[in-house]
Image 1 (cartoon, rainbow, N blue to C red):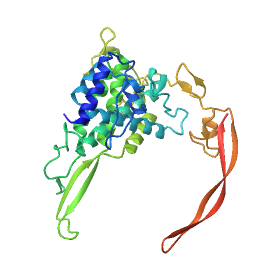
Image 2: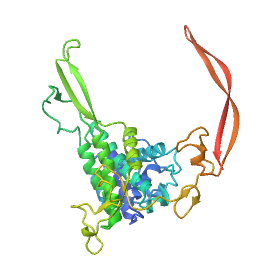
Image 3: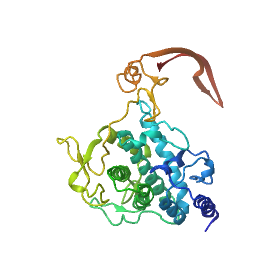
Image 4: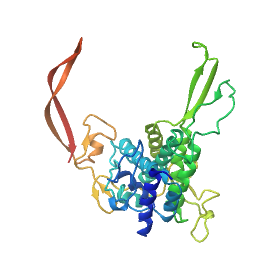
Length: 364
């Protein structure tokens, strides 16, 4: 065991000795906003309840003790997920604001709505993405490059190089992320489905990269490997799935005493009988979203008062929609900035000072 692993074992022992149980299925998400992050290498994250991090479930603790070197990448995946969620929804009434280090997504996750479906999918995707990249980068002893890609394709190129190990990453994500779901009720099935949709987005959007070998540009031999898409792309795919998410209802023929088996026939069907059943890649929900126009502590809505809006846009960032009909306030300011910069040999850059007017619209 190296010092890096030993450090995390000490921290995890502290978690266990405190005998603290998770307060919610997504408690591990809060690793992404803890103020305890201290870089130890390219990807590092400290797991410590003393720094405002909600504890994880006993099963997740066991996995962390078994794979201590993977703990930093769980935190990194959570960070990536929160950041990507906020980017994708920056122009929506619900903008995925991080509420606090103790409760990153707020009370919205108590409602089985579209927004909650997205948070489950993007966080599961984040763990898969971070772990897969760490495997192929040689940062983990538990995994390496994905060796399943072998042989020669029908087009004549051959598999080679180092493919990102999404296979191992998906397995670990299922074990760790899905371990937060302790029940067998309808909500659990929906959460697990959305977790898998996130992992599917990572897996199905991998890209093939190739390198030519041979004299000059002859490309006599071409070797290819699979690489993860940028996580921004994964976020875009899941955002599209959010917009087309399927509202589902409980499949009455699939229950026994109100409980559902985790495997087998899907336990839900589209509420609208005219809609096609959702696939593994689709997001599902069964409760309406709350009103995000007004601040509501009960639902976790922060409201849109004070949010920036675009006075010329007809989209979701437009003042009419963003401000929910309450109107907006316009303010102007002048800023001085460098402009008309020119390079002179050698080696100077000269710029002019220009003043520009900035107009800002904020919702009332």
